[in-house]
Image 1: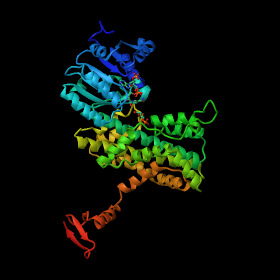
Image 2: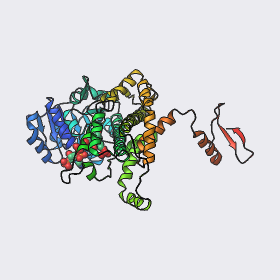
Image 3: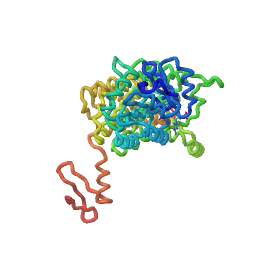
Image 4: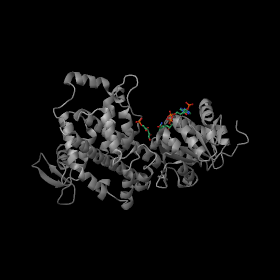
Length: 482
Ligand SMILES: NC(=O)C1=CN([C@@H]2O[C@H](COP(=O)(O)OP(=O)(O)OC[C@H]3O[C@@H](n4cnc5c(N)ncnc54)[C@H](OP(=O)(O)O)[C@@H]3O)[C@@H](O)[C@H]2O)C=CC1
Ligand SMILES: O=C(CO)[C@H](O)[C@H](O)COP(=O)(O)O
């Protein structure tokens, strides 16, 4: 199929489903000659039939055709299912490529897989660029947020192309070189973890407004619409208003009432929590969100509990609805700040552990547009880290410290109402607990240390002098230094 176009395409895309097809169109619309390939040719043909007039596509029937159609050094974006399919495609590609060529994996790969693949390809003289891409179908087509890892050298070639097709905010592309090997996919993973936490907080807000304050979905849609013109302005808040306002055509009921209340997950939120546990970083907001989805999906266990214990409902009902709506707004904002602060902590910890040198302010910059968590307040986060790259936590930045303490009283009222009304709000509660624990003068961890020493001679440190100590609990309780 490839002949006169051999060696002329600027870039190739293999995997033309939702993301790859739209990314190829985005590249073509920006004037690049794009070689397109898919395992089954029907997708390639459909892309050309429907959108072939949007730009300069070079269809390839086989991977060999795809490689032959590319300019050197060759650049191939892989947009296939994460996991084994990605390995299968890479294995096929590496046999066809030459030293200096670049393989860009834009799927939601686990960063450890990316590190493994990068090492293998580097040994063959190839660049492997694990790249987070966020924005779904619409973003891929009109401008996603792009988080490329891999070598600085590969970014010199790829950067201009990727930056040109990324979303633009204030004249800046939502794309930058994140760091070497798996840095890009790690940052995309945490992006998705934050996405989970943000959606959980939004869902809790809805649940409280509906069950504690008695608002209808259409009314709550209006609340979210109003919130979207203030500090909470974000893509997720915007689409919450759309989803809550939607009415099911078949039944005439609110759409949200006809959807099964069992949340699914593909794994990136879970990976974020697993990696946070390894790094020792508390990402309580993301963890609560993952567990809330898991609990929701355990339909049988939930039914059994309802049968045995009765459906949860407390006594408290909200009196002043308007005041409660404002309280929930403030609690949502404060809890969001905590969730994002935890996510950025995790990126910093991984960057230090793996030696990636990630610029946190730059990550906030490229998340301002194109991605699912794009939000007005990401610009505040950008400012905070650009003002002080070593900020110990986003919560200590002047703006965020002020925003969270301004909302503290409302936050406590909302959590208290949730507890009293029997509406589960694990995201709000754990964010508030984190906020309280982080600034506590003394934590009960001292007692935990005492207990560990009692039952296992695990030792402890003292507040008044250096050293490591153990109390001989069964031998007169004498303290010894170790
Ligand atoms: N959908 C989204 O909103 C987002 C998705 N992503 C990630 O982007 C990637 C692509 O996502 P999406 O567009 O939704 O597509 P899917 O994840 O549904 O993957 C479908 C594509 O993978 C190809 N494929 C599957 N198995 C193989 C294999 N063994 N060998 C070769 N090709 C194979 C399919 O080819 P065929 O047509 O022949 O079956 C098809 O092109 C995924 O890694 C996903 O996690 C990232 C951000 C957002
Ligand atoms: O990558 C994404 C956005 O950037 C997707 O939204 C994400 O994969 C959705 O994950 P899940 O199905 O687990 O909710």
